[in-house]
Length: 275
Image (tube, rainbow, N blue to C red):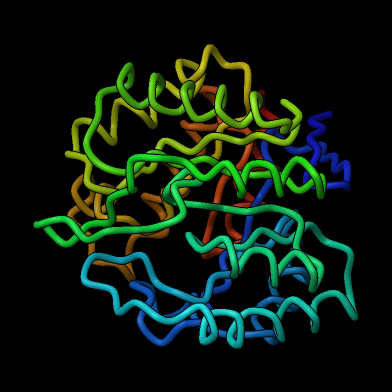
């Protein structure tokens, strides 16, 4: 049985990885079917999602930034609606400290931050997201004080060693500011400014990140690298996504972030019986 801590909750699954279902409370996320609010969130819980990941601002290339106030207005009602029905762990996909504080107060458990606590996102010349250089001490201390978990993501190009070194530095930063080691998850940032070869290497080597001391989240669902391998457009990348997720889990990933919860669970159930 796989067990992990998400905020103050301890979760367990008989499957080889946890399934995180994506809820994009946005008009511009790259996969249209992921967009929605409380209705989508509750549907993913019914499908069996172990975790929900709720976001109020897209991180796709060329995304339209939104204010703190708008992001909070989008996601907090969804969190509140879920909390009236379920205790499922909730992750919030935001790069803004103020947004996560509001989300935590509403019932969220995990901060999923593409900047790895840098507290800001800057645009790069090719339209991808790039993290600011310095992580936020205030953000790390808040996580330590509240007991919330964090997903630290690498953004930009990088080899497996470079991604691991960066994430390792951010882990040390969190630990030095009081965050417990069992509250840290790492994400190599597939599709965020990386070449196809870099993405593929990271998918194949999750246990190489941070010495395999922290759970690795793989967010591969319908991304461009799946299209590069299959020649399919976003809407037709489900089969490729399931295959890539399966391989990443076989290689050691503990959480898969997906648009298609039921299909992901079916794949993991088959893996459970055949491993």
